[in-house]
Image 1 (tube, one colour):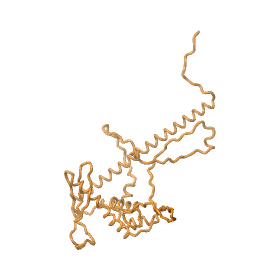
Image 2 (cartoon, helix red, strand yellow):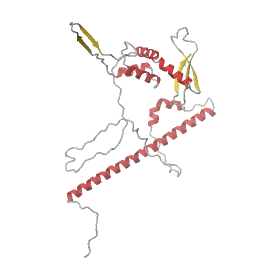
Image 3 (cartoon, one colour):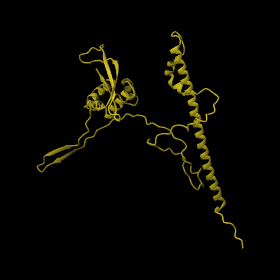
Image 4 (cartoon, helix red, strand yellow):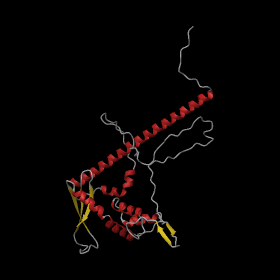
Length: 298
């Protein structure tokens, strides 16, 4: 008697199970196709952006050469004007140009640069209604895109509450003990340490003048004048002097110190005229793995 050949095929128990499995597979297929289309669209955006960038750089180079080798009286369009239209220039769509086939020795870039995995992530879910998922054998979520988000600054008032305890001895005398409060680097200042840190970073790392910082704080609901902010900067300079001394010692321990001289005007300098010559020396040095940059006015 000849036995039928073996098979690994698992037959579904019913037609409804078969339809459910097919629907799930089709849904997964549509999701994969959507992700692939999104990748293709992102690659096209990158290519168009690079084309526009190359065209702008070529134009800047042409104008620079014209200014360098051409007549000094020549009146041409200057790239300096585009500096005032930075957003419009960068966001302008590239002109329609025939796409050139890539060379064999050039590797195509694979889309946009991914976000750092060290960034905190918050998931935003899009849910089906109960009616839409009625009868489904399973539901799952698929990541469709990532967006870089930022939490805007906010102004708040910190209220420091000091706990105090009252004790009474055997003779009936009362004593009091108070919790230790964190000391502020600028006594009696109405700005918090976080606010002063924000001011220092924004002014010296981001190049924001105090009058703009005053407006930013006011826009968020705070009210501190630029005079007060300037006093914070002066007071913190004295508090940070020990740290600056340590950085200077670290620079002196390195093999080489590089310096740059800039002429500046210093107001209210004891013993000096505001119109006199003053110089800022910015130094870079220290051990190769722990270099620092420090200013010095003389």
